[in-house]
Image 1 (cartoon, rainbow, N blue to C red):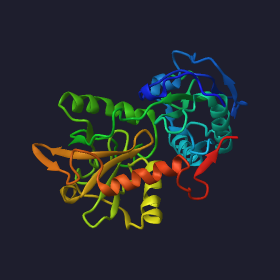
Image 2 (cartoon, one colour):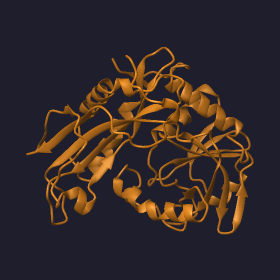
Image 3 (cartoon, one colour):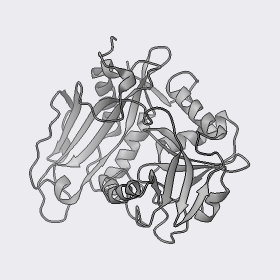
Image 4 (cartoon, rainbow, N blue to C red):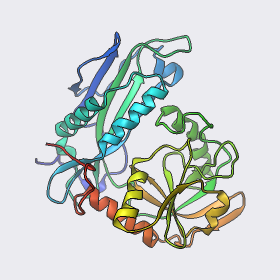
Length: 341
């Protein structure tokens, strides 16, 4: 398909309303048939549950043009399963996983001209969102909801190349034990906004959140999981019931073990161990892996051995392998690549 007349190389990571989006409504105990619309606006009651009690969750995934010209998405079935888990925790009616997959196909197909060409460094970012539209004044679940899925072309998360981040150990808590840290709820991200703005004002790129119960173990940042490389090349990720199960992180652990032959481990990572790590990264859909170069812990500076010039060698191999799989350059494990036909 002929691509849209866009300067793909100049795209930033931001919202550009394009093409069509998918909409389905929940009313009288059932989801309606979904449909595509060009209308970018949502009209809801001033008393809608999403406005009163933040009853909403979302997802994020990408569509790519592969090296052989196919249009694909990466593991969308895991996004469908994760938004199901989020909805159940927030007492939102589950949007069926098979309908979610249909919506992905419909949205990408309808906006295929906005899927950037292979080699441009850009992708089509897809945002599914589920929220309460029905009016509710008492503290209880609403009776009506909407599921939307829209897409926007985005450039690379790091314009001008990857630069290692400087982060701080945060004094605020991201999620409470037995709370909602393990789901992709909008309220989790709202809680992180003050902390990230405060970090930026003080010269840091991101926050390192610790577990709220003991404040001794590393959890995640406001929007990404941590990935640690030990000095003997073991790939370690923090284990906690309040960490969002990142699809990128789970995929990287498979890549590390099955493609690179590395030992992998998911376990509690005490803050006291961080200074012993050879490489540190943040992983998520937007940037895949963001290297960390320095960490500040209340006046104490931890300089990661991989430095401030770029990714460490193991992190770079992980990044190159996963992005190669996503772009069709490297053969993917069965079921990872979903082709849009």
